[in-house]
Length: 300
Image (tube, rainbow, N blue to C red; front, side, top):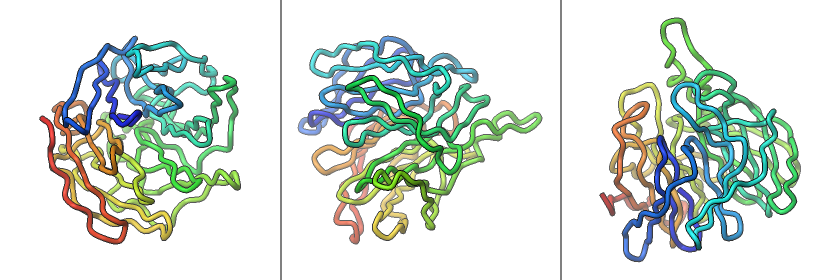
């Protein structure tokens, strides 16, 4: 899910799905055209008046393949176009993606679906020129996570190492969640790791920045049910707080900030692929040092 033009756009997922747009004024969803192909395990980002999809996977579990090019969605015309080629040696899915000062940054991810190739890669893409630049690796590998920018820094939150398997236990990767938060400073070009770890580490949670704080919603671990925790980071102190939880545990959905409120939509309610959820919750954050109000379901 991504916010652009005052609305939230939900896209991707298993199978070829329509784009759906959420209007916070009417609290309603509208279905638009389908994606040009199956695309999942990606973090869409707004760039200008368009939405970019990069480092997505396509195909069936567990050997999903990364997309070879970027795909660009135009909300004004409900149309897609194919973007620049992604260098073959840097293709992956499940990566964190964010925009900073006109360029798109892509961190970590996994090369071969849910089987192998979790990486610490870090890249910069300039949509204006099509130039791709390899930057210093992140401090650790991770996939199935999101990234967010706050005050000139890129934060990598949550995720796991899906390359990890055990004999007779292919899905052991569900337990390899990563509590460390890695931070890239655009001014210095250096990585650091926060002293404070994610209190409840999960993969595939929703991640946004709002009002100077970073919020991480839900996620997935080895337990049967998806998580419902809401975890708040104060970037100034590096400290995490557990605050009002989701009404429904979920992972693999979307989160976006619209008019100062955070909307969390869709996803899965259990480990892996289901049950699929269609509900939307709204969370109203207060100033960082006050307890935010509880999340509530606004559409079903």
